[in-house]
Image (cartoon, rainbow, N blue to C red; front, side):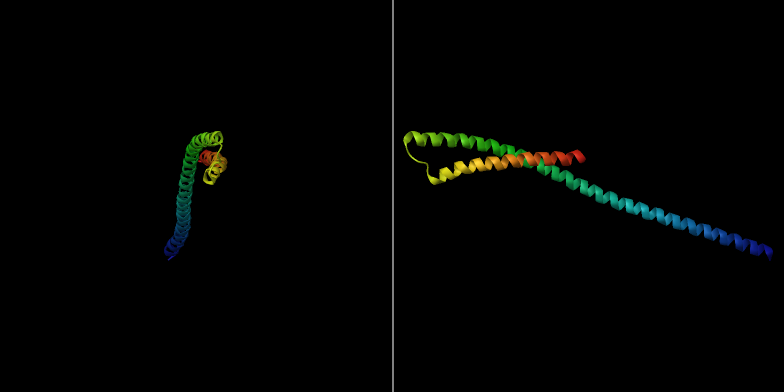
Length: 127
């Protein structure tokens, strides 16, 4: 009878140890699942940031291209204004508006190109 009690005591101790290991394994599984979720979310945000930086780079490049077009248009506008002055006639209102708006666009697009480039560079530097 004493042998049976000894066996039961050892089984209870073994059962307690197994339960403890089971809890530890469950905690490890929870940690791994949490890590996988965090990694997935972080990777997704990194991809979004990289895409945003690439979009900003495209905005900067396109803005620089537009600035070149504005410079060309302003050269034409200067020739037109000079020709009108030489002929002693005034420019039509549409032409005056276009000349004034070219200056405004040049300023705005120049600022846009600069800020887009700086922002894109800042995002790329953290990736």
